[in-house]
Length: 259
Image 1 (spheres, rainbow, N blue to C red):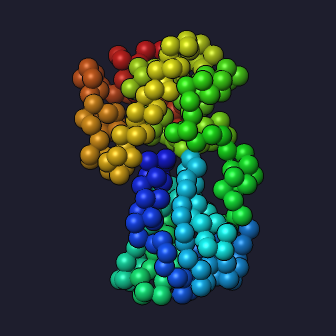
Image 2 (cartoon, rainbow, N blue to C red):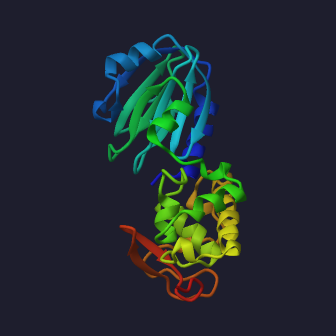
């Protein structure tokens, strides 16, 4: 599932491939993914314009047009971008064709993403009531957000209205690196434990971004390469366990992450 590292990787890919090229036409294959626009409206907004820059907030990618509008992409459970001259990949929901005969395809096999337009990323973030971006949070901001929270720590980390960008996988990773059980109540965590979570959050996300969110290139001491049936803790060798927490399957080491 695309989380902050995957979306940041897509943003950098977008920058490396699709900026400063005039858009000739678009093809919308997944109209159900459009939010508050139509295929015709999206086409009018993009045709004959160029993308000038990008930014990201949490799991949303924003691409600025020379008109001042922004294209908004959310990648759902399995979305990605593909730039090239070949036929569009299977499950392409939006194909943006440029005057140089290249195209950028937004591919979403499970059709769970979103495509929209906005006048500014700030307006979109406010409209969606998103929390601050996970990589933009200072330690003091993190402690302030935690101060008013009740319930388990894992669902809190995944709550996009509290902190934007962390999902099921990276919440497990951050808590594993912090030696915190995902069922621990936020209110019961000490300031030292909360600061450790914040520090490990930044380290885990930065490390994943640096390897372009490729799980095969993550350090072996990370949980994610071992997060599966039969997996063992890379720290102590214990069998990993899983449980439903906040409606999601969570993986943890029962020895290193005690309740």
